[in-house]
Each structure stands twice: as C-alpha cells, then as structure tokens.
Image 1 (cartoon, rainbow, N blue to C red):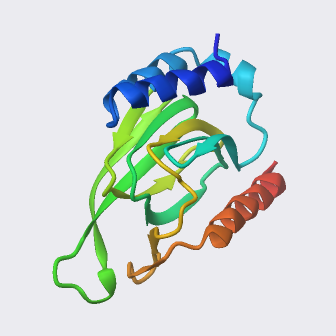
Image 2 (cartoon, one colour; image 1 turned 180 degrees about the horizontal axis):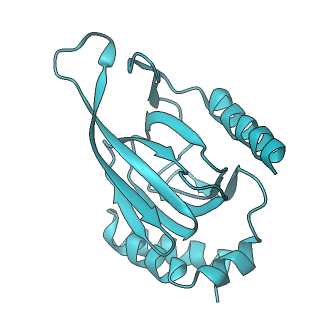
Length: 186
C-alpha cells in the first residue's frame, strides 16, 4: 500500500544513505510497481497539475499529471531527479548544449519513453523536455534532490532553442492551457 508520509520518509532515509539517485530510485521503483496503490492514495488523475507532496531545501516530491498531448519546454533542474510513472506515458527528449553557440543553444541528444511502472534517474546537469504522447492523462511521481522551486533554472525557447531564465508562471500556465484543451476535447 502506498502512503505519502511513509514514501516521503523512505525517500529521506534513502537520501541520507546515498546523496545520489540510487537509493531513492529503489524507493520510487517499489512505489510505482503497484500503480493501483499510488492511484488509490493520490486519487485518480482528473486534470493536469503539479501537486507538492513534500518540499524542503534538500528534497522535493511532486505528483505531476500531464494532460493528453501536453509538452513542456526543454528545461533543467540543476539538481538530480528520479521519475516514476504510475499511469500513462511520459516521453523525455534529452538535450545538450551546442559548443560555441550563441545564446546557449541546445540540440537533441536522445530520448526515453517511460510507461507505467518505469523509473528513470536524471542527473543534475540534464536538460530535458517532456511530452505526454497519449490521449489520456499521465501520472508520475517526481523526486528531486533539492529545492525544485529554487531560482536559477533555465528553459529554452521552443523555436530558437536559445536559453532563457525559467519562468515558473509560464510553466504553470501551460498546465492550465493543457487543461482547457483537455476539457474541450472531452
């Protein structure tokens, strides 16, 4: 059975044991190995959202629900992350900085599709974009080895692929825009 408080405590213990992703990844793997228990504890996803489950300077745990066909701009976290999918699918495109480019441009460097029960670590220097490629909501637990909401992050313009300051308000608007599209399609 998945319990948010127990999961958070397990993540804190794992973080104390190993400041990297290995121990936390195992905690996430155990949790999403029973997707029905996660849904029972968090509720059936009904709309795109970013829900804080735990937030401290050294650990942030989010329940992120992606609307159908929703895409988030390329961005970084400046901290490591572990992603565990409990429903649907999350496609990640990984990006790398173009050496010597003006404006901090990036180029695609790889991709990984994550489905229900999958867990993936992201290193602190990873730049990625996220897409839900399916016609239903996707639910994922995202665990970050630090303060996800701290300033200093970047995102990249979707057309020019040039670096800019991360705009949290714009990011949250994307969730609301995706919800509006989802509601109209429903």
